[in-house]
Amino acid sequence: MTLKLNMVSYQSVLKILALVGLAGLLAACGGRDTLRYQEKPVTELYDDALGYLNGGQYRFAAVAFDEVERQHPYSSWARRAQLMSAYSYYQANKYEEAILAAERFISLHPGNKDAAYAYYLIGVCYYEQITDVRRDQKITELALNALAEVIRRYPRSEYAQDARLKVDLARDHLAGKEMEIGRYYQRIDQYFAAITRFKNVVDKYGTTSHVPEALHRLVEAYLALGIIPEAQKSAAVLGHNFGDTEWYRYSYDLMQEYGGAGLSPKS
Image 1 (cartoon, rainbow, N blue to C red):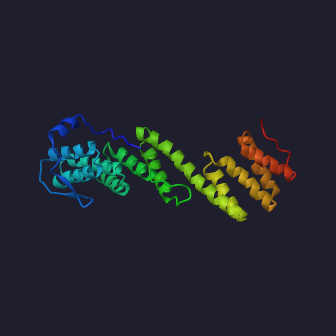
Image 2: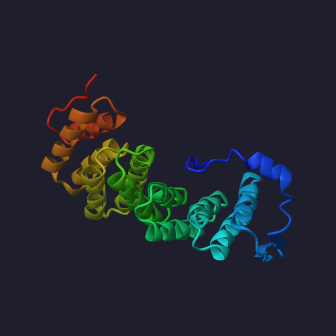
Image 3: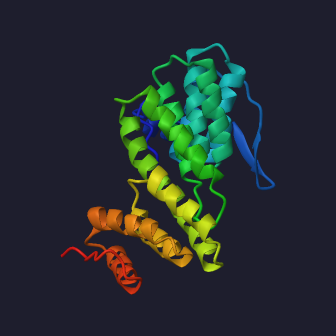
């Protein structure tokens, strides 16, 4: 995914690339990004950094934007460079560095108009590190919290709109993790533990795609324990809300085997 940074104009970049050799500020030595110190006017430093950014040399760009602030910490360019450094680290897939840079921008400029983007960048950095449901989901929780903060602080912003979509996907991911754990407990006949996980999906993640299966798994688990009324209740909720799914048809068949409440799948 390429994250669009729309607060900085690049109209002069092509001219910069044509005029600046980009040989002075940074050098790659031994596989690392290292700084060869050169004291320069702030605009020249910033233009060098933009050149690296637009040339796809994102790690170099991040270091170059950091240098703008180091050499000219009280200039207006330093504030711009802080956020551009965060964006460059993000583009280089250096998520930890991007998050730290964005958090620093927020702490120094909490009322700045670009703080919304900094909050959003933090959320996206966490979001892009989400792993499959078989792994620990701490990063998913961090993404969810960071994106929710964007929505809370800037509900009418363009960033909030995208954050809402990502929140839905993150919640679906967490529900998937609960389902995986619940199915594991069910396989080893730990039905009460399985029921807790499946109920979490229904109660906490009720708008996700995993709810129909969770309700069916509740039917299975309750029947395995001989708790027929609870199985009937879960099957009825499943039929009322998801009567056209295969999960309801599976539950219907099970209920018939156990002499259930005469539930029938909806056409």
